[in-house]
Amino acid sequence: MNTVTINRKTAETDISLTLARGTGKAEIDTGCGFLDHMLTLFARHSALDLTVTCKGDMAVDAHHTTEDVGICLGLALLELAGDKKGLTRYGSMILPMDEVLILSAIDLSGRSTLCFDVNIPTPKVGTFDTELAEEFFLALVREARITLHVKQLAGKNSHHIIEGIFKSVAHSLKAALAKDAALGDTVLSTKEVL
Image 1 (cartoon, rainbow, N blue to C red):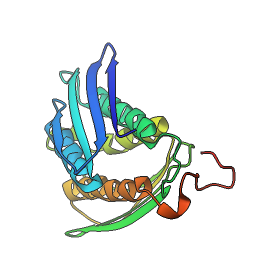
Image 2: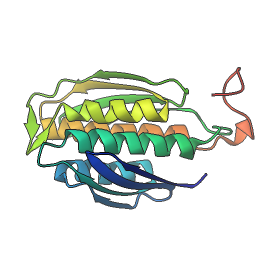
Image 3: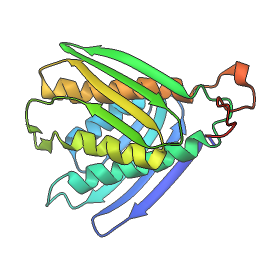
C-alpha cells in the first residue's frame, strides 16, 4: 500500500488524514499551530506525504485534537506498513538540534510500546501544552502497533526538545519503512509474521 486515507469522527474531533510514500510534502490544518508545525516537519523528515485536516474542540484545549491526530496517523502507518514483507523493520536516529540531542528507535514489531524518557522544562510552548507531545506518540504507537523509544540526551529549550523528538522519530520511521532488497518478499522475523 502506497497511499492510505483515514477518516475519523467523534464528538470531539473530525479528522481526515492521508499518508503516502513520497517526498515529504505536507498540507496540515489541525487548528493548533504548534502541532501543524510538528506534523509538517515530521512529513519532511520522514519523506512521507501527509495531509491532515482536523476540526476539534480547541475551545477546550488541544488535547483531543493532538491525541486523535496521533490515533489517525498511527492507523495510517499500520496500513501503510501492510504485512511488512521486505521492510527493514528497525530504524534509529540520534538527532542534534542546537543544544538538544534526541535518540529515537523504532521496531515495526506489531507490539505497542512507548518508552518516553524526556524532560520538557516548561508546561507550554505558546498555547500548546508540552505534555501533549507524549500523548501524541502514545496514541500513534498504540494504533500503529510499533515499539518506540525516545530518549532526551541533552536540551533545555522546550520548543527545540519537542521539535527534535518529531524529527528524530521521523528519521527512525523512514529507516524502518525502507525496503531491504536482501529480504525479498519475506518478513524480518523468525516467526515470519509481525
